[in-house]
Each structure stands twice: as structure tokens, then as C-alpha cells.
Length: 366
Image 1 (cartoon, one colour):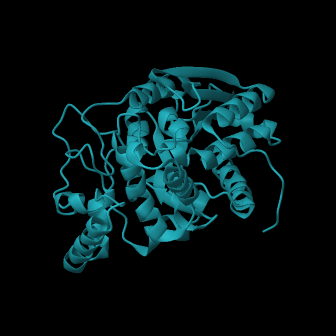
Image 2 (cartoon, helix red, strand yellow):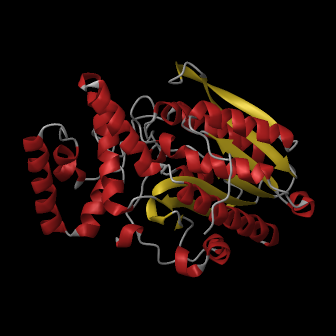
Image 3 (cartoon, one colour):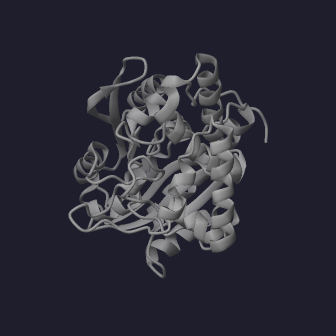
């Protein structure tokens, strides 16, 4: 790996949005925006989901890339979208496929430096059928109180850690990870809370997909995230049905060794509920949908697990912290999910461009 200067990355949501829109205009892409109805950004800026389309809009093959589902994780996905727009895109490829980039799906979280929406909903657990009975996660009840412990109280934190160790000893690491990460719909103050109704972001994504690729028959989808995997390397989570052609295509693009046996930090994959990928399949019923989530590794399993809890705790207790402490904790949280190192950024861009090219070329041959 070598250092390569790039300004594809940004230091804030506002700059990321400006950079994305400028790159889309320079590429001759069609641009649209969905304005968040309830809030402003941390700098007073408008909050929007920005969408651009290029390539063949009538093609039955459409390539979808989403950034910012988990708010503050959006920097890597935004940088990759900008890099894609700035690259020398193959005109022949773009006559065969359409490309739709959704920038900042969770603009409030992106701007304010949190993973959830402003209402505390984990958007990547919100895409369930809210007219039906919500999925259950009974084991989450065993860990909830430990996960929301006050990190500024050493005694409470120690009790929480001891409680989690006891659950780990009883259930095992895979079951504990599933209980925490699967998604839950009973504790609004907890982690991976999927909400009780469709969020504005959920509804906006449906409108975007129906408008821009409702006719599609084959879709390659990448939802960019950070926190799982080796430092600066992609980690692949495919969600097409087992044995489906879509899953076989995904494995062909991303590598069978990465797709078919993916274990987040060496643990069995949770039975995720309410993913954005589930929403894409629901909103595009005519299409076979391949792909899934691509994570970028940051600081390892322990830092990633703590970041989820730290994000939650900061949202609940930030107002009573000294300014210096709050600044340090927020900087640490951001570095857990968006490392400041140029080594990390360079790796994400070089690896990510290869992944995007492999996906686009694979889709065109599917």
C-alpha cells in the first residue's frame, strides 16, 4: 500500500454532501434531493438524501450504492461514491447498466456524528413489516441493562462488564453476538433498536428506488458500512437467498471465499432483521437483487463493540459531560468508525475502486 493524495474523503457531512453533488454535476449525472423534514445539521446546514443517476436509465441492470445508513459511518461510502464519479467511467459499460448513488441515507446521523436517526432508530434494522407483529429477540432482554450502563461510573461499568461475561459464559460468543446485533424492537434506549414504524429515511428510499429503478430486473446493491473486518480491508456480507442465482453472482464478483463463509470478527453471522437490503428487495419486487453490505475494517472487534455502546451513551448523557471530556469521547468514537489515518483512507479507496469495478462489470454480464 502506498500513500496517494486524495480529497475524496471529507471532514464533515456538509463537505461530503457538497463534494458528492459537485462530482455528480461534473460527471453529467442527473441529481435529485430529498430534504429531511424535521431537523438541521450540526452546522445549521440542510439535511438531505442526495441521489444521482448516470449510465443507462432504461437498462434492466441497475447498480445501487448507498452511503450513510449508519450516519457517522458514511464517510467511507461517501468517499467511494465521489471517487466513482470522478473516475474515468467506461462509456461502453454505462450504455449497458444504470448507476444510482444514494448519498447520506441517514443525513441526521451523518451530520451529528451518531449511528442512528435523530429519533434513535437504527435504520439498518427498520426495514421490517411494521403492520405485522415485530420480530422477537428474547435474549436481548438478558443483555440490555449491561449494554446501557453509564460508562462514566466505574462501578456501574464494572458490573455491566461482569454481567456480559456471565452471559458469554452461559450462551457462548456466537449467541451473545446474535442477541446484541440481530436487532430489537422493545427497548428504544437500547442498541440496534429498529423502531415501531417506518422512518422518513425508509419511506424516502422506497420513493427513490421506485422512481429510479422500479423497472429493473437485475440489481447489484452495495450498502457501505464501517467497523467489521481487518484494518482498511473490505468485509462482505451478502444477503441474497441461499442457493439463489443472485448469491452465486455476488460470490463471483466478490469472491466465494469472502462471501460464502463470512464471519464478522470470527463469529457466526447474526440473524439480522430489518436490513436496508430487505427494503431494497421489497421495493423492487420485479428484480433479482445481488450484493449486500460491505464493511471496512477499523480498530477490531473490541473497539467496534464498544463503539456501539459509546454512541448510545453519548446520545443519552453528553449534556452533563465537561466539554473537554465530550470532545475526546466524540473524537474516539469517530476514529472507531472513520479512522483519520491516510493509510486507512488510501486502502479503502484502492480496495473499494476494485470492488466497485468488479461489481459493475459482473452486473453487466449477469
